Length: 247
Image (tube, rainbow, N blue to C red; front, side, top):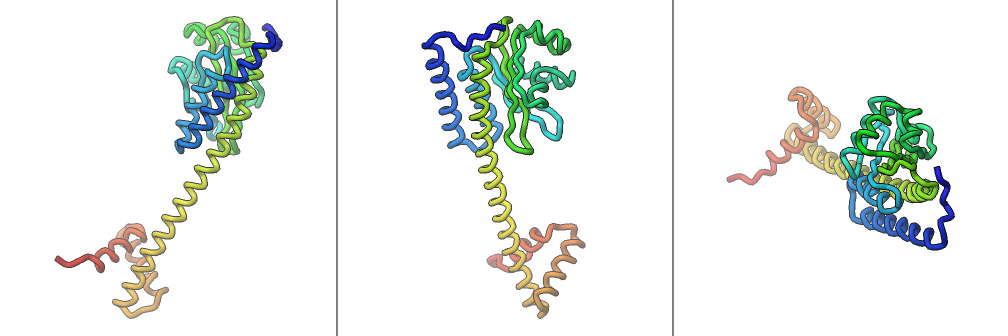
């Protein structure tokens, strides 16, 4: 494989401008989009822009040790990811499990992962580049790049992918924290809404039966168990029945 980091003074400014543009686009999407899957798809789209030799890309995630392709720019290369999952080997899994960047040509892949290499050859893919992706303890995997060229990805491509992946990890980490904060806030809001309606139902039971708050809560719990109904749903029904406007 040719080491061509030093390709001339015009190369680095051009490719770094591409990387910067790709990251700016990703940052813009992050500011507008809350869906994690959409963000991962944007990562795929932008890595094709950021790394000159990349023709198609995927993001593979490991969940409880099981890999899946979460986003891709092309269904055919997504199928090559699946081929690796079935064979339990390949550059994507190697990068995800080892935490190291993997850069191989088709000829090199044939010696290491013959089943995957056969499928890649049939799909017209000749070069592979995979970078480990570590977002947090729950989300990890790899960004996978594919090219029809058979000379293998260049060293420059590998360094650019590492640069892009490092920025992506930080961006996705922030997005995950934001999404988790939103989920927690919604759970708290739901809990407060449940608490409020249950307190209202307790007050109704206390007034009707002339009992204290603990006894009223016990009555509600027993009724919810008898009816196999969630306590909050029972409380909402009771409150609605009392507050409904008569016709």
